[in-house]
Amino acid sequence: MSAYNPPVRDILFTMNEIGDLPGVLALPGHAEVAADLVETIVEEAGKFAAGALAPLNVVGDRQGNKWADGVVTTAPGVTAVYKDFVDNGWGALGANQDFGGQGMPHIVSLPVVELWTSANMAWSLCHILTLGAVMAIENHASEELKATYLPKMISGEWTGTMNLTEPQAGSDLAAIRTRAVPDGDVYRITGTKIFITWGEHDCADNIIHLVLARLPDAPPGVKGISLFIVPKFLVNADGTPGARNDLICSSIEHKLGIHGSPTAVMSFGDKDGATGYLVGEANRGLEYMFTMMNHARINVGLQGVAIAERAYQQARDYARDRVQGRPIGQQAGAAIVHHPDMKRMLLDMKARIEAMRAMVYYVAAQMDVAHGSEGGVAKTAAAIADLLTPVAKGWCTENGQIVASEGIQVHGGVGFIEETGAAQHLRDARITTIYEGTTGIQANDLVGRKIARDKGETAKGFVALMREILPQLTGPLAALGGGLTQGLDELEQAIAFVVARNAAEPAVTASGAVPLLHLFGVVTGGWLVARQALAAQAKTQAEGDPTGFYAAKIELARHYARHVLPHSRAYFIAMTEGSDTVTGFDVDQF
Image 1 (cartoon, rainbow, N blue to C red):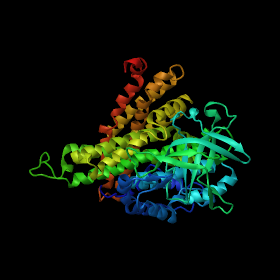
Image 2: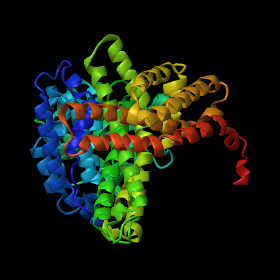
Image 3: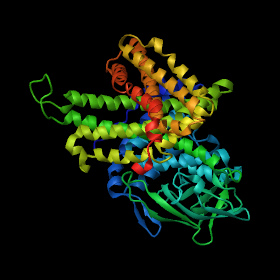
Image 4: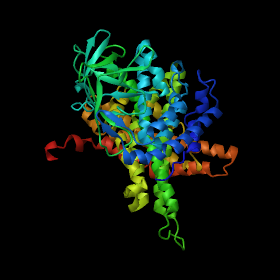
C-alpha cells in the first residue's frame, strides 16, 4: 500500500470556497478562531494521520482483532496510537467547551475527520461513533448524566457506541425486543444487539453504550422505544470507572472489510440485568437517537470521500511508476499514466472526489450557519442541511465504491492481489452504503421526509439557489453551464413528480427513489465543482497559478461536465419512467 499524502491544500481550498470558512468564523462563538489557526490544525492533523494512523491501516486489516472470553484485543500499535490521539486533544476538537471541548465549528472538525478516515478508516470509526454519542447525550440527557459522561467521552478517555440493531430486527427498529425494567432510579436492561461498531476494545477505560430498549408498558412500534446509557463500567462518585456492568461482548464479526474495527455482538443482562439510565423522556428514544444517526450519516458520507481519496492516491502513484506499453503518439514506453484511458479513469476518480468533498463540506457549513444564526437565515440553512444529509450519505458512499473499484482497474491484475493494498480500499468502502441506513433508506428519506413532506418547497428553493450560478458559466466553463442547466431542469421535474405522485402512489416514487438520490447528487455535485472552478479562476487572476493548482480545479470541473453530469439524464428517466418495471413485476418470477 502506498503512503498517504494528506491533501491539505485541497481541503483548505474547499473549506474556504465551499464551506465559507471566513463567514462561519465570523459567527458568534468563534471569535478566537483565526484562519491561520485552522490551517495549522489541518496541517498537524494531516501529519498525525500520515505518520501515526496510516501505517496501522494494513496492520489492522491483516491482523484484525482477537476475541477471547468477552475480551477484545486490538491489532498491535492501536492502543498506543489511540493514547497519543487522546493526549494531543484531537477528540475534543469540535465538542462543547462547557464539557472540555474546543468548540470548533463543523467546517473545521469535519475535514480533520476526513484525514483520520483516509489514513485508517477502521480506526476512525471509534472516534466517529463517540462523537455521535456525545451529541445525543448533550442534546437529550439530564444535566447529571451530561456531567458524568461527557467530559471523559469528549476527551476520548471513554468511547461511545450506538446499539440499535438486533438479530430479528435489522433496519426495522419497530421490531426490537431489548427490555428495560424500572428498578428504583435505574433500569435493568436485557437483550442482544448486533453490529455494534467498537462495542468492545482495549483502547479506553470505559465504553458508554447508547441502547434502544422497550419499557414494560411501552406502546408497540417505534413509538414505544426509549434510549438508555449503559456503561461498560459503572461510574463511581469520584468519576472513575467502578464495578463491571452486566454486559458482555459475546463475539465479534468476521467481515469483508474494516478488519481493524471490532464489530461486536453485545449481550445485556445475562445475570441480573445491566444497569441503564434513561435519556430524556420515555418512549422518545428513536427521536433522540436520530440526533446521533444524522451526525453519523454525515460522517459516513465523509467516509465515501475519504476512502475514495485514499484509493485515488494509490492508483495515481501506481500509474506514475508503472511502465508498460507505448502510449499513443509516443515512440518509447512510458508510465501508464500517459495512456488516454488511464488518464480518463484518474480524472474521473479525482473529479468525483472534488464533488463529494464539496458536498459534505457544504452540508457541514450549513449546519454551522444554522447553529450560529437566527431567523430566516438559520431556518434556511437547517432546511438545506436536512435536505442534503441523505444525499451526502448515499451518493458519496456509492461514489466511494466506484472510485475504489476504479482504483483496482488502474492497477490491472496486481490490483486484485492483496499485497498491493488496492483491494483493501474497496473492501473497506463496501460497508459504507449499508450502515447508518442503506442507500435505499436514504433515498426513501429523501423522497418521503425531505421532499414530499413540505410539497417540495425546500428542494425547489435549493434548485433555485443552484440556478443562480448559471450566468457565470461562460467561456471554458460553458459546457458545464449547459450540462448543469439540463441537470437542474431534470431535477426540478423529478421533484415535481414526487410531489404529484407520492401521496397516491408511494410505490411508484419508492421505485425511483435511488435514481432520484443519484440525480440529486450528480447535479448538486456539478453545482459545487462549478463554484470551485469559478473560485479558481478568481484566484488565478488575483494570485497567479505557478503550480497549476487552480488550473487543475477548472479542468476537473470541465471533466465532470462531460463525464459525470451527463448521467443525470439516465437517472431522470429511471426515476420518472421506470417505476412500472418494478411495480409490475411478479415476485414469483424471480
